[in-house]
Image (tube, rainbow, N blue to C red; front, side):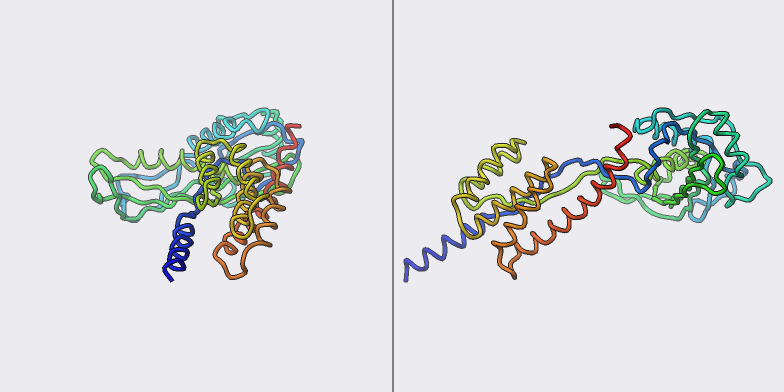
Length: 324
């Protein structure tokens, strides 16, 4: 009886020592938009109306403000140029919008054709509108461990793309995000307009061009010497040695240890961008896992992540063909 109790205690201890850790890495993700391969140069224009607001009469807690188109367009051009996706980005230094057409109407075809010819570009990207809706809020200051009065603003950014001799825009993107300002004595509405006009240019970037995103993956750590050593290798970024240890476990062990090693190998191969082997290893892990186990839930979640990333990679490959 004592022997049985000792065996059960050891098994419980081993299970308790098996943990799930996270590894984080940066991966290039596809944009929502696929630009035609022939689009090599882009002109950025300001199609926003001039600002005619009397900021003295605006209430921080309930205001709707229009942004500065010159600031927004300039920052959009800088954001595009920094990514280095197009061969050339040209900023048009005059406001395009005339009072002849309403705010929601796109740039007229004749004006688009003239601007593309003038800037000698393949396409126009236009800042159409930048707006912020303010409301009363608070902001937490970690250094003081307290909340202070603030103005919270929902920023809306509208960008359209235009091609020559096209009656309608190629696409239109309208996205929102939130900014917050601490209400201090020297804060002005001019500061707020400048801040959200600059920030508005960054909001649509991940929808326009491929972008880097931090990803998280889980892996099994602990339970036996090799698994613990492999975990140390992962934290030291020695993935090749971790892979060797996991392969050894997969080839020599059975049951949960073999399953967990197969799962970890799937993570390794994904980080090497070898999705074929990653899916094979994950399928092997699934075949070894119990249907109602928490490990099976982890495996099924990872399968969804791999499938989603596979679809993203297909879109990304199309978008990156211009560099081949």
